[in-house]
Amino acid sequence: MLFLPAAALCCLCSALVTMAAEQLIQDDFTLTRRVGESVSFSCGGTEQCYSGFPYVFWYQKKENETFKFIFSFDKDSGEVPPDFENSTFTAVKKGRGWGLEIKDIKLNHSATYYCACVKLDPHTNRYYPITGSGTKLYVTDEQVVKPVVSVYPAASRAHLEGNSSLLCVASAMFPPLVQFSWKRQKKNGGELEELPPAEGEQLELRESGHSASILLIHQQETNIYKYSCWVKHEGGTVEAQTQQEEQRTDISHCSSKHLTPFLFPPTDYVLSIYKVRLLCLLYTVLIVKSLVYCCGLSLLMIRRNKGPSTNCTHAD
Image (cartoon, rainbow, N blue to C red; front, top):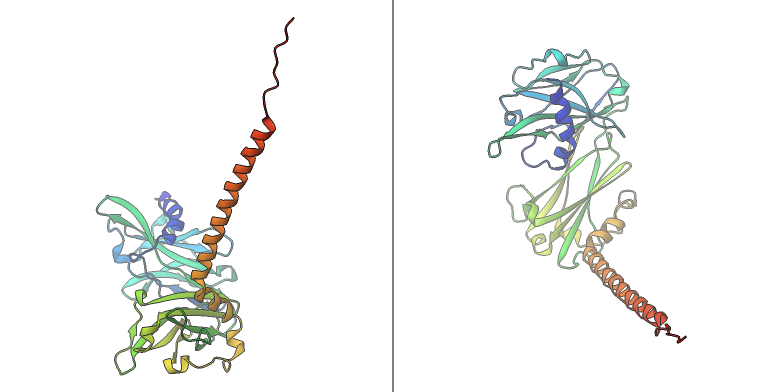
């Protein structure tokens, strides 16, 4: 049985890259604890796992290190196979399923923890791993602090290339990781709804102490909806909303403390992306023309240097 975690570990990195809708659910993306306390990690969606091999594997990933298998148990009963018994990690009941627990946290437990299991493809009859998105554990005495969230127009001009952009900035939080989501509501009333992916492009940026999300939306949509930014954090979810009428005003009054790390580079990137692509195409054409010119010139020089034949036949 010991070869199974190793085989799953070999596929874990590629599984994390190709994760789609069928993935395990780790609701907590960060957890903060002190030394000596306990912590438990949840892992939902295990009903997808192959019933013929109902084990959930747990992996630990530290900074600048590879994934390390640490524990496994039965997803239905929490039973731990004899080969996988561990004094540090145990199985704990979490809701309708089972999760991983560390009862006596040490400093070296600071890491990101991933759950994984094996799924059977009914079409090919082959097994493949599915994983969760990971939960990062911070072992520290620092207090959890909710982020300060603000929404601004991402440029002083609201109309550019038929689009409008909003900038959502989260700062002054601990842990520093957050998750952004955008929602909208019709201006004449209506329910708050998730923004369909096809109706807005999103770009996220992260710096020390700050995180930001830029939403690029079609200009005609701004006349119908008002938008709000939702920031999920270990300390709770924070909402920030701005009226579209306010987005058409100049942003010189906005706090430079929040805008300086993000406003100008992200704005230049989002609003000039097509210009960058055109510039790349222009450079490519110039490079090709230069290569053709150099090759032609080289051929002419070779033919010129070769010149007429100087071989002569001398009579005795």
